Length: 470
Ligand SMILES: Cc1cc2nc3c(=O)[nH]c(=O)nc-3n(C[C@H](O)[C@H](O)[C@H](O)COP(=O)(O)OP(=O)(O)OC[C@H]3O[C@@H](n4cnc5c(N)ncnc54)[C@H](O)[C@@H]3O)c2cc1C
Image (cartoon, rainbow, N blue to C red; front, side, top):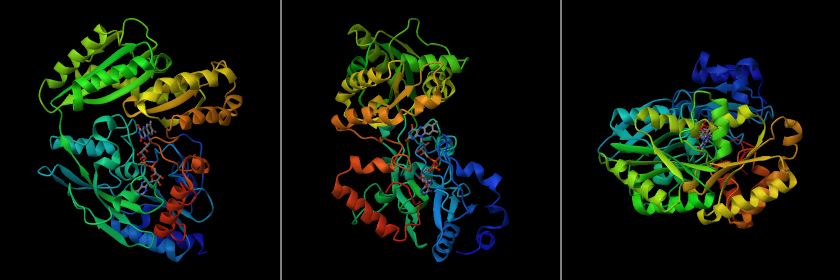
């Protein structure tokens, strides 16, 4: 292998002196994942500013037997964006590919480079009176490339779909440096195999996304956020059915939160307040939006009134201003951080068919509590999509290490019930390093074989994000 110093100097020839980091301290933040569970090391962090520079780096890596770990905002939750530390990896940061190339308000589409943050694109769309709907708690840092590579979901999937549904076209650098120029902004294009789909959700293992053509939507003129208290997940499901039936496409968010979740946010974010007068076992935060002025408000008020009348929910409150809506959203979005502040937790990102959710929660809690009676179940999240972050918080004052040492036991219980319900062990976060060793339990042999063949086709030397997914 080429000498480390020569590699750094060669890369500087491609991207400029200041755009290669090789100092270990400066590389450290790029080498550890968001949750601090995976730490690796790399030969260098390279920061190209154009698709051609990405292609040149990939060709260089191929010529010198180096591997490439694509990295966007490094907010991924499965260890996919950090190197393994096997001595020959380059971190390819897409941060400098940060231009919005064009916005077309006639076709409601935008062409954007991979390193633009989700929040940056949302703001740009808003400046053109459009909506880019993908919304995650990490949107200030997470990038378009990362969201495509992980097929990210989030709080608006219910209405607008995952990232996959928002992609019209992709520009991708292949393992040998060739570039697929696929940025057509067409709503219909059945001209053969739809190659871009292969890269969406491939977690940087099949190609490097450098730009994307994405869908935009009309900006909502009315939007109403509500926070409701209810008795059980069964009631939440009935509430979802009622809401979908009565409001159709106006329903954009439907998030489930147990009392423990709200308690943790109230405890660790002292500025937050319980929006409801009484205490409830469960909560739903939901949002309606419409391109027609006042429609969302009208429909939402009717739906909530009917739900109270039918005793499906116990209480509900509307945000009367944008500021109050932000307060409700903060209760939901601060939940993952509140969990971290509270102490150790064991996490799962699962999905099951909607009708199975109440039974799943009952069975999983029962079985987990039977082996760890003081554990605190905290299933929350995107109920509208059948996706729960099925987490468990350690008992107050318990030993974190001893608690986490029992993770596998808890995973086994959760995943057994998820499998019985015909669900998925990775609803929106991907496989990365964390779930790679379990993939074979969840896919049939033929699907696994096709996945391996795709990997061999798009990355014959195994240099694109090695040790991730397959
Ligand atoms: C607080 C918090 C909340 C979150 N909420 C959600 C949520 O609601 N829904 C959800 O789906 N996820 C969520 N996530 C996970 C994460 O934010 C998303 O997966 C996000 O899309 C990752 O974007 P990123 O730019 O940070 O990607 P990174 O973390 O940098 O990379 C993620 C993966 O994509 C690959 N990759 C990155 N850029 C490219 C590229 N240009 N080309 C090819 N491969 C690339 C990496 O190699 C890696 O495998 C959350 C994370 C946090 C920290």
